[in-house]
Amino acid sequence: MKSHRLRSLCCWAIDLIDIRPVVSDQTMPIHPKKDKVAFIPQWKLHRWLLFYGCMVFTIHHLYVWWAGQNLSAMSAFAFYSISHGLISLHGLRILCRLGDYLGYLEEWKRPRDTVPEKRVQKVLGGLLFMYFLRPILPFTLSYRADKLPLSINWWCLPLVISIYSIVLDFWFYWYHRLMHEVSFLRRYHRAHHDSKSPTSLLLVYFDAEEGFLNSVVIPLLAWQTLRTIGLPMDFYEWWVCNGYVAFAEFAGHGGVRFYAPAPLPCTAVLKYWNAEIIPEDHDIHHRLGERENFNYGKQTRLWDRIFGTCHDRIECIDGNIDYENPVTLPLF
View (tube, rainbow, N blue to C red):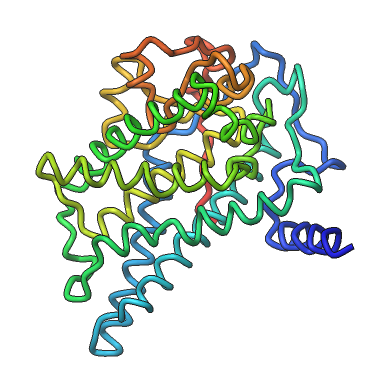
């Protein structure tokens, strides 16, 4: 009885913040495989991320101007953790609206998986952990009360975002591949692969062990790697990088039918080597299941290209992208 009440409460919370990507009584466009795929330009993705990142930094500076002192350690953690979570949830809601308008990948074959009632507690818990508690690691390791957001080296920031994402993706690639190929590790990844046609909410459907590895260990390895090669990151740089990482994660699991490579300053270079990642790449990964698989990266396909685990795209192929009618990623 208590378990049923808790599930009902979790369902109510998800409905309250309006982040269910697929609603059963709602009609959406169902595109044949060869229909043109919508296109979102890179600059619109960067605009979205930088707009909200700069908004948070501006609020921080306004507080310092008003109070005459910087945020305390606990206040700073609360502010940036809540900001990261709210921006992520807002992005998730926008992705839901895009799905209503543009439709979903492979919808001609199967509908998107919804969140069953028995999973809703784990999904809500994953949301709270990933979007509100994950910033605790960069905060603990790098926050300094004597520095403000304007201390960021803005000229070097594009390079830092690019290198951090590629390094993070290296560690994630091997962790993810081992989760598929090593039998005793596969059980920790099985729950995440219950869905063959996921939506962004199912991004956070994972066991506790996997959540810890994905949200704590992998970012820590990336941060330490950058320090080792002489590129230490302060808190504000890391916070911006985490915003880019989170955006690629929930877009990659959204299954929305658009062509939009994960926004990185080095996307043009990656695209030249056919190593940029788009939502269809991870969508194909889920369709293939939990055993032998492809497309292990989540920020790029660079390591998949290098180690021979790229899978061909199906809908987002050359000649099937509608570049002439770009779609807007709305700010609000």
